[in-house]
Amino acid sequence: MKITLKSRHEIDLMRAAGRVVYETLQRCRDMVRPGVSTAEIDALALQTYTAAGASGLFKNYPTYKPGTGFPGNTCISVNDEVVHGIPGARLLQDGDVVSVDCGIRLGGWCGDSAITVGVGTLPPRHEELIRITQETLDLAIGMVRPGIRWSDVARQMQRHVEDAGFSCVREFVGHGIGQAMHEEPKIPNFVSAEFERRGDFYLQAGMTLAIEPMVIAGAKDVVVLDDGWTVVTKDGSYAAHIEHTIAVTAASCEVLTKS
Ligand code: MG
Ligand code: MG
Image 1: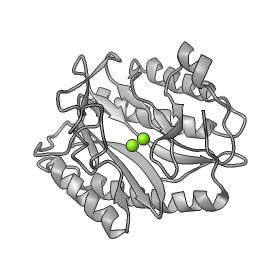
Image 2: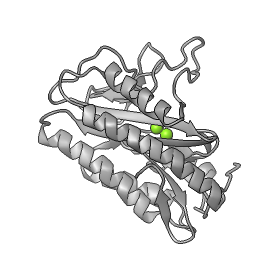
Image 3: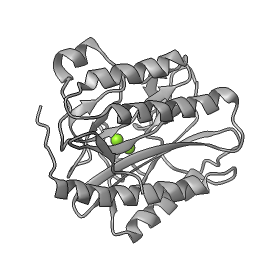
C-alpha cells in the first residue's frame, strides 16, 4: 500500500481545489427545489467550476463496462439512489433526498466532496437520515489526528449509523486523494475482518483523504442499474452520502472542501 504524504504547500494547493468544490456545491444546494431537473443542477456545477479554471473528474470516468464512461459532470443520486446517479431530465419533487457529488482538478490537484439535501418537506425519518450521515462524517473528522488507527474511526462511524437503525454501504468506500482522485488507502465507513487484516493503517500528518459515509435508511444491500453506474438500495429505502476531502495535520486535520 503506497500512501503519498503531501507537503504544506501541496495541501495549500489542494485547499484551493477544495474551495472550488465547496463553491460549486453551495450553488447546487441553493438550486435544489421542486421542479428543477438534475441536469440543470449538473450544468450549473460545470459552469461554476469551469469559470474557476477547474476541470471535472467525473465526466467520462471509465467503468468495468466498456463504452460506458460516466456521462455527467457531477453524480446526482435521488432517494433510493446511493451514489453515482446520472444527472438527467428527472425533476426534483417535494420529499426527495438528493445527493450531489462533485470532484474537480485545479492546478494539478484534486478535491472531492458531496452533500445531501432534502427537497421541501421530508418525513422525520429522512431528516434523521441526512442528519446522522452528517454527524457520522463530523465525528470521523473530529477523531482524525496522527497516530489514530483508521479502523478505530470507522468503528465509531459504523456505530453511529447503526445505533440510529440505519446501515452502512459495504461495496463503496472513501479513498486517498491528491494529484489523482483515487489514491491509496481505502477509507471504509465500517469495520471488517478483511480491512483489519489487510487495509488498516495509522493516520499520519500529510495524508489527504476523502471521507464519505454512505448511509441507507433500510438494509445495507445495493445493486448497480443497467446503466453501469447508478447504485440503488435493494429494498428501495432512501440513502444519503456526504463527503469531505481532508488533510491530516500535526495536531488534527483540516477540511479542504469548505470555504
Ligand atoms: Mg465524491
Ligand atoms: Mg470520493
